[in-house]
Image 1 (spheres, rainbow, N blue to C red):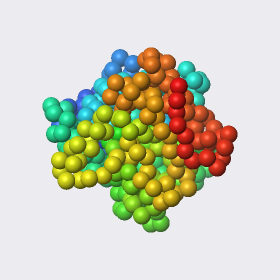
Image 2: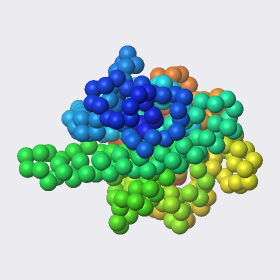
Image 3: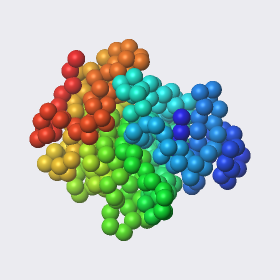
Image 4: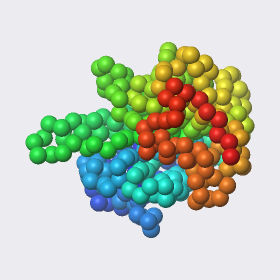
Length: 323
């Protein structure tokens, strides 16, 4: 499994292609550097470098790439476990269709959800500049292929799935990219962007908010939410404790659909989220049985295959998932 990380490794932060890469789990500060790596089935990790990483993605037999940005309080092993589960479901649905590429940003491993939560919020924000540079690296590489005679461009579709606080990472990364590296706004780089159980304010993707950049960078933006998501209730309590009163996007969907761009769609998962996950938070992978796709996964995969959120009704912008 190929992945990108801005977590510190043990030893030098200088890129050395082919070296064994081991996370320094005691250091949860975001690195200013970004590392392109491969994780073998044995769990061994090797640093492959940016150019080799992008070339492997291009040469892969998979038709599409799904960047997976995990939520808060997830150490690398948990991130890989979730990504492998999602990859298995994708391969079962259609062979060689979707390659899952995790983005591992530094979460804390302190005890206590409130302490974890605020440390991870700071880490999510501070991860933005280094991950924005990874996007710059991708665009530079893609454009160089376009301008190099005899070199085929990378035609794979790029999608992103952000879960929980991973939505904050995505929002801040695009904001940093737009502020420091781009002249005229973010380019359209993602076919589908899935915002699952999003731990950001529910007005974040309104046209006058910086989360609008998520919509600018995407053909489709699909918000999956559930009002009884217990993990987001803890998030809301943590925010209230710090005098921040706002519903979460993953609880209610957008505050006002009239104020979001036209490429935003919503899916209410309230009827099944607690059936698939006791906390009602990680309901986008397996269903009632691990390894068996749930209805949310089925909808995500249908979007990936078709590029349409509701192909039977192109004017539709919302749905409820029920078993």
